[in-house]
Image 1 (cartoon, one colour):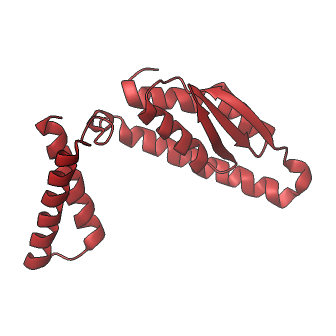
Image 2 (cartoon, helix red, strand yellow):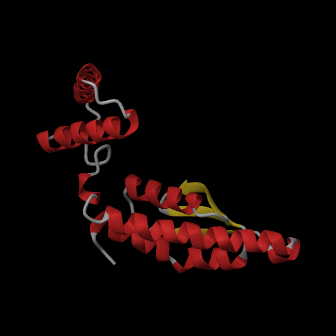
Length: 161
């Protein structure tokens, strides 16, 4: 556990606190800083600060992935809404099993959560290096099986394509 991860955790906590608090009086700022220092100290004592809990290696590629995921969410949202308005015939539920393309639990969690955040799909299980995904439509299942999202997560994680 390096100083880099501790500083990353402290910075992340401070930025999050500043964004969520909205109060910038000296006493409030001091209490916020104190609480951040306490949490960093506690995490260090518990030994839970690592590359998984403070994924600094993701920061350079995170904005691009977040933008891409946001576009996928909007696109899927429009598709699901259109299909629901058309009626039952436009929906064809399907469950598929896909390769997560990563052995790292962090990458698997990012992939599973990204799939679940996208309307019309939900990750119902993770076993070994496979994800079980329920899709509302055959097109949605085909998109997941194509592996685009898994490749994007691998690129986010390791810079691979």
